Image (cartoon, rainbow, N blue to C red):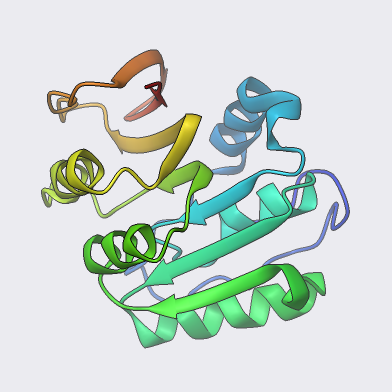
Length: 184
């Protein structure tokens, strides 16, 4: 797994030795960021299920101004911290341990808003529904911001609250990526 382009282009990220973490495949990541394009420049990014920090660090490498990583696993957070240091991105990155549902709601209450939020949870565990429920009560996205959801092609995208619309879905084998736009 590597950073595809930008400031840290070609840098190999540290990956887990076990399979508790399922990093986004490079081809899916490359396509996802091709769709996002220049909108990532100067964006404020939230990586909800950080894992290795793959999506957040790719965002930073492509010009995002600030990235916040959330994960519940100590092992994952160690990987994220190690990868942030490899990229020399410490000034622009924040790492928070906790449940993404609770942390995202707390960030909203503190006045934090994001241009992109990546939601790549363990498949088929109900996490996407929980994040969408948080967004309904605590809309932590800026107007015009995107929630980007990676899910199993066998799982349905739950109903979206008012103000959110799925503007694009891409399928990559057994994976689907949804681009959910927030407009008020």
